[in-house]
Every structure is written in structure tokens, then in C-alpha cells.
Image 1: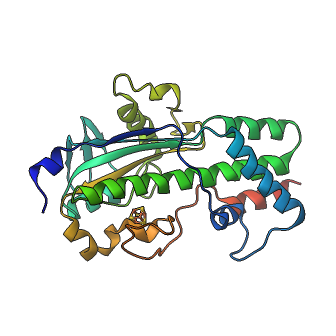
Image 2 (image 1 turned 90 degrees about the horizontal axis):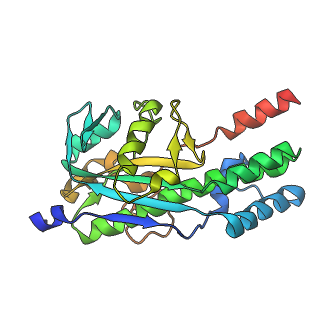
Length: 268
Ligand code: SF4
């Protein structure tokens, strides 16, 4: 049974050393290989090298904070005084009788993209590509890891977590990235602004980072009835003990890899 105390229990987490466990299949998908393809030769060497490089040098982090000060209707969501038009997130929050949100930021840290850029400058495009895409796979894995932590917390508090939504997703303008980031980093003493920033265009720095909003409802019984509200269908975390539905779709691609590869081919 859900009690008033559950709603008052706020969650905050800042993990500066999360375990990074990129699934090979996810990395292969982001690299643009067909499902079931086996890497060989130079490509396999590069993939192993990128994995090892990140294990040794990457400094990933995950931050999440629950915000109770939330008002919303079907078109907009107001979080702690900041108003967003986050597309389907608003509708989903209405459907699920959400009462708060989790603000989440994840990042690979700056080392990955700095090294990838240096490799490109040094005329090593293959190393650049494999490391760059490995960074994208790490971001997806960090979002899945954040989802797991939130679902675990929700399970203990008679709540349910809705699928995450981010600026740049359908219906939510990427330019809201700056306002969302301001909201996330504004907490005194957090010093997150030393780790992440956003350009006017909405691009994040480090580039391999992601901001997300998860709606929280204390009416978990509603979620299974509203199938589009089950986050597990889009979550890549295999073996999750809280999973309520099989994975249905791949997560949105962070990189349009095939287009990029095609572009490179036409440039050569
Ligand atoms: S599989 Fe479902 S319960 Fe597990 S982390 Fe993903 S969204 Fe949460």
C-alpha cells in the first residue's frame, strides 16, 4: 500500500564510479554491423582496444535527483519553476497520475571524446571511430544502469518509473537541454557544472552525455494497464530482476552510424 511517507521520501544519487558493462551486441549495433555478425581481424582488434582503453581511462558518472515540485498538463511540465514542453512525457505523466520526476544526467567523462579527437587529428580514423562509438555505447549503458537504480528504488517505495524522455526526443525541442541542465546542476554544493555544460544549440559537453527525465507515479497498478508506460519494453538491461515486460524495441540510436559511414564512404 502506498503511504504519504512514500511520497515524501526523496531520492538522490551521485555515482562517480559506476560499473560500465557495455554489451557486445549493443556495441556492434551502434557500430552498424548486422545482428549476429562476428567481428574479425582488424575490426575485432579495434573493438577490443576501445573496450580496454575505456576500462583504463574512462571516468563515467551518473547523477539522479527526485524533484517533488512538479505541475503538469497534457502539453507541459513545470519542474521546480522551470517549464518544459516535453512532448509525450507530459501525456504519459497525466495517464499514469505521476506526482514527481527524477532528473538524471549521465556522462562518459571528457577523456573519451578528447582522445577520439586526438586520434582523428593524428590521422587514425579507424581508432577514432571505434572509440567514438564505444562512448555512445557507454552512454546507453549508463542510462540503463540509472533506470535500474530508479526501478529498484521505486520497487521499495511502492512506486513505478515511467520510460525516460530527453530533449531531442520526438516532440521535445533539443534547445530545452540548457534549461534542463540548469535545473539539474542548480543544487548548491553539487558542483556538477564543473563536469557538464550545454551549448545554445543544445549540444552537451562532454558530447557523450545525456540528460533525462523519468516520471514517477505512486499508482504502479496503472502502469501495466497502460502498455506504452512500461519502460522495460525499451530498456536494454538484460537480466534485470525487476523487469516487467520483454524488450520490444531497440533504444533510440545516439548516432546515425550507417549515415555516418555512408558519408565517409562518399567523402573518400
Ligand atoms: S528492465 Fe525494467 S525494471 Fe529493469 S531497469 Fe529496465 S526499466 Fe527498470
